[in-house]
Length: 94
Picture (cartoon, rainbow, N blue to C red):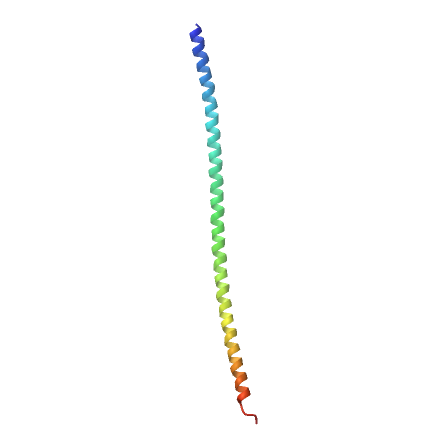
């Protein structure tokens, strides 16, 4: 009978250990799911930020092109003004 009692106690302890192990595994699984969801959220944010960077870069490039065109126009006007000013100084006065 003492042997039976020892076996019952051993199985009882094993049962408790299995329950504890099950709770730990479930907890780890829940934490893993939370981390996976957080990772997915962060990946979504990274994708959104990459799209914003692309849009801002495109806008910057467009503005740089416009600025370069305006600088070129200003240089042309400046050159024409200097040429006209030079011609007016070299023209004979009546």
